Amino acid sequence: MPAGVAEVLVERSAHELEQVVRGAMGAVWMLHTDVGTFVAKQPFWFEPAEAAVRGEVAFRAACARGGVPSPEPIDGDYMIDHDGGWWRLYE
Image (cartoon, rainbow, N blue to C red):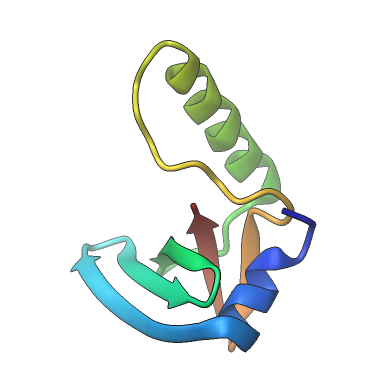
């Protein structure tokens, strides 16, 4: 997917945003759109650093190569600022 796809999913094609779990650090949502269902993580108390998120993405990829299943991050911007809050989307 091209860069900026997260913004398009959140702003233009979302039909339903359903919270599935909430913890001390954030919430996890299911985002139902015209093009599929995605997972959205919403951190509550920090603005994520792009370098830290890129490190998490690299670690997830290494784990996946070793056979550990995990959600695939969406290509493009890993974090978006939407309506004053940070979001991270996964396929």
